[in-house]
Amino acid sequence: MAALLWASPGWAQFEGAGQDDGWLEEGDDSSHSRRPPNLSNDLLDPAGLSRFHLTTRFAPGLPEDTFSDDLRWTIVPALQLRLRPGLTLGAALPLAIYAPNPGENSFINGNLRVGVAGGGYVRLKDPEAGEIAPRLGFGGAFDIYAPIANGTGNVDCVPSLNVCDAVGTVRNMHAYEPELFADEAMFFRARMHADIAVSIFSAEVELGLSPGFTAKKDPQFLLLMSWAARLSLKAGAHFEPYAEVANAQQVAGKSLDIRLNPNLTVMSITGADLSTPVMLTLGLRTHFAGMDPALFVSIDTRDSVVIFGLDLAGALRPGPSRRDDGDDFLQSGDSDPWD
Image (cartoon, rainbow, N blue to C red; front, side, top):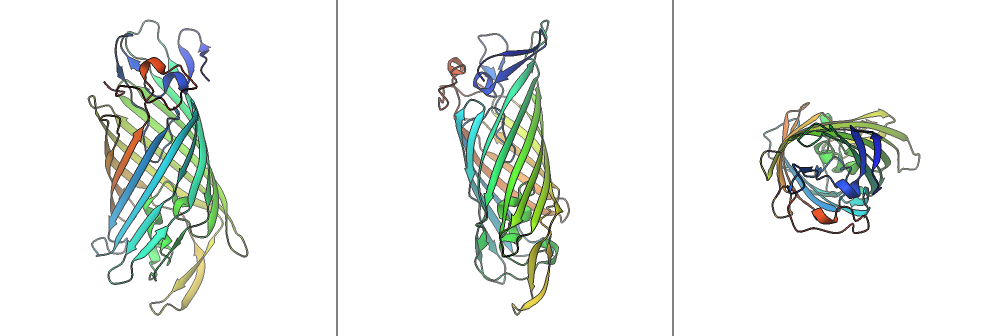
């Protein structure tokens, strides 16, 4: 992956992530102004850097009553370890709290996710251009979700969420990845990623397919399809405003949903839909001293629920002089990518 493969003489070349690492140098060889890597907490990065995310989402109210005293809060610690340039191993364990008022608080753990991801770049070259060339990125990922999600406490039925269990109350907060909070279900998720960066702008898109089955006595086949898109802007040396939109739809299978009345007796048994609303996210990511935190606000376009989020993130940066060393995959370097 460290070798250069010329796709077409004079206008394009493929670069393994070990050489590019997501930071393309701008200007001449003496310049250290470089594009940052993709550090989205939902989309993958073709460079495959070692990185971490601690992403929290907080939603006051429910779809039925946006201004109620009910609170939902999720926290997803995630770690990605570079095995070699362009290839990573990752894991995440989501946690959540649902606090209805009145009612008993529910403490929730989601499904454990483990997976691999990889990718690389194609840099389009113009021999007569004196500025940085456009860059294309391609990648893919495969994740497995172990069915360990469960919640404590008694939760009343919420019709528009199609579930009455604690796990389901926070599922829609992760519109691109409902597999994290799919109760009693195991999924296998495959994703394809593409992005382009031109000057200070970048655009990304992903498509995902998640076959799975319910982890019950009589397993049922499930199939989810997901998509996400992202636009970002390099606004100065340390700021990156961005916008994301994402959604997942269940296209096959039904998981059992036991509905309870307020007396906690069985009211009906129906099919639960794991589909999520289209979620629009506006955020600002900063890049200072090797850390890349982000603040964001997400809007549930179906139920008009507002979700507030914080992503504490960082990536191990390869030093400019060490980018060609494919074996030194944990080299952090001495400079910020935009210095």
